[in-house]
Image (cartoon, rainbow, N blue to C red; front, side, top):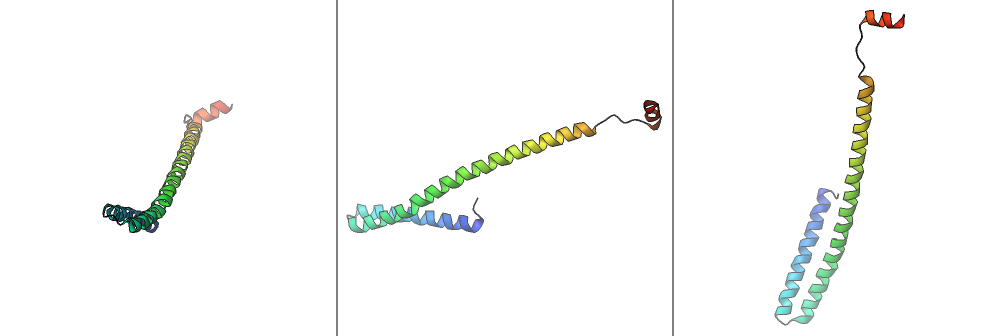
Length: 101
């Protein structure tokens, strides 16, 4: 997961891309097609790589969460088996002496 500063930059890039696409659509509606084309290409250059990056990050985060879950389950199983080994009935000194003889 990107840190907070990187998240802010990603959000700003995404916001700039969306605003650029809106600006391009507005220019296209006013028949300023050359300017609209430039604005829409710039928006495309911002939004498509950002979308790809976010998809890749999401897939990576799913893998990390899955690995952490498996590791936690293994730790819990290990702790459970350890506690089962350490839980033996308590004996008094008299019982210990009679068991050893």
